[in-house]
Image (tube, rainbow, N blue to C red; front, top):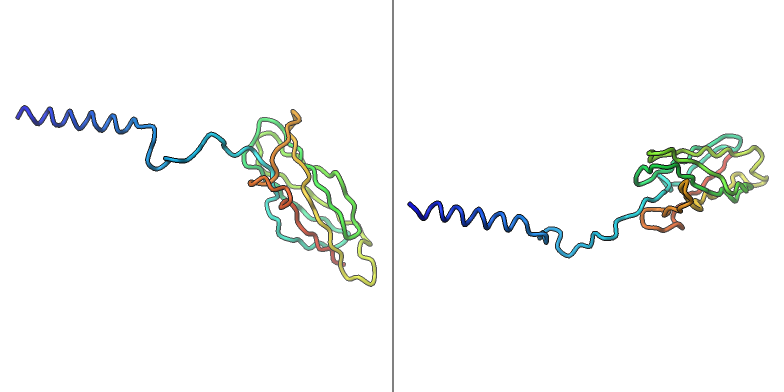
Length: 151
């Protein structure tokens, strides 16, 4: 009878020691020291069609809300457009922002029946001047979309 409490005590101590092990089997070998920094990206890079003389909304998103405003700079060029250094601002603690791009009339030059412009994100900057990563994989070249302009 005296062996039962000693045996139970032994297994409780063994369980407590095992539970305190910092090298969990499920996370062994993973390096968590370099977490993903905040980034800005287009919500979708799918091409959009817009009529000349109208506007198109472009959605941006951030991985996490920040304690300061973030300004995103982008260019819309090609197809008769040269809109450089355009901006959209994320308010504090927001993870989404929308830019409205106005397409002027008479962008399509006859005999063409459409025009193609490209929206490219160039940079994202916090209020304190710190630049953010563009895209979740830090690949700025992928942060663009095509605008097909039709009559």
